[in-house]
Image (cartoon, rainbow, N blue to C red):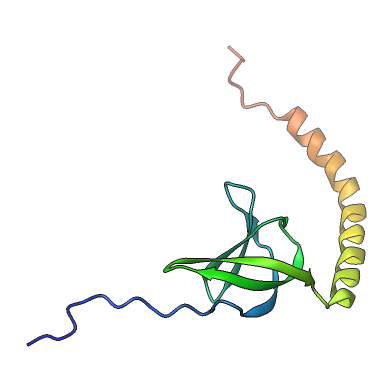
Length: 114
């Protein structure tokens, strides 16, 4: 009576040969970069976390895929503006770092006092 007993895997959001621009979100155990497309994991060799690259899907399995870098991402204006804002943040953090160090050194929980 119930014809929906079997499990049907969700179709993958990528196919072999698909090309796309992406950002490497993490690095896997074997050193490959990890990108995602609609939650689907793609392993991309020779990349690092934060790289903006153009990739081509080379192999698709049930739950993961593999891709190769075919070029750098073409959105260079975004990269340049992000790089400038990162420098500004680093400069503004320096005074805060000194006060954090003082706080860490002066912390005493009273465990050694008797």
